[in-house]
Length: 68
Image (cartoon, rainbow, N blue to C red; front, side, top):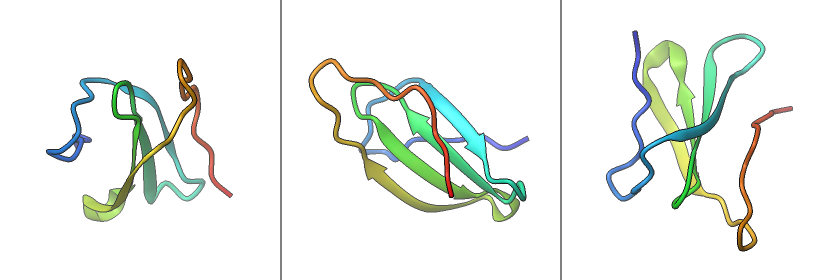
């Protein structure tokens, strides 16, 4: 079992959504308010590839994650 963890600078306590890539090797985790940090994990290596703070309009929310 693997655990998704927000970066230490994030104050989110929950995830809004998660999605695996089609090949199951990458996991996208969208942390919830107040930070809305998107985490991209190399799931098969248990390695965080990147994290970025999503800018939303006031009162906005992320409801799903997709990739192409």
